[in-house]
Image (tube, rainbow, N blue to C red; front, top):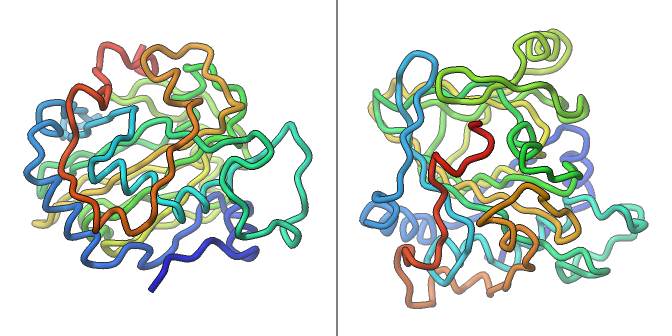
Length: 298
């Protein structure tokens, strides 16, 4: 079945809740290929960063900026996925049309607001040892990179394996993106949101455990508060998270990622993920993040 762009009702739900789940966006064959390649990808393993939570438990992530013709790049550059991101990202300062007047076949980047790939990361929460992530907003980090428009940034999580309460699925505070950015500080090696504002949000908004099956996709706003618990199960929880930006939203404190975050995506057909001959990441082209270069940790 061909992938579909988002409906006006889905767009409205994202704007109200700060997140949107699309079930079975990727089929089992697509997810299986992604997982098989990720398991054997030496470049991913070489550049994995260990991040400790406040209890000392450890999660691994590999983060890169430039999407290529590897399996991850083909996934994040897929026509329908990028088109859905384009439907959700704010298009200010240019005027926007009402939802019911937005053509669903509009090409990403019309009106000079191209969709760009900021970065992608493979998140690996291994059984029994995968650590927690504190409450935070993605824009709580990206603010330090001096992007000015949080509504022009978002993250997309692709479930590579099933994610549930037992293995530390993502949790969100529904509607918390409307609070704007809150202050962030260190918790272990992580940067977390002010606990005072998290507590206030939890008193007034719904706390949701986002359980996903492999192949489901979660779109979430850069300012929604989210976290995850440690993986206490005997099953791994892997996910690919790709973050997107508008070409009009410049990061004024960017280094290696500056060009990627404002470079329009070279879109590929959805079927490229299965039909193109590709493998894992090419080390020289991906431009990986190191802990030392991460301004959000300073």
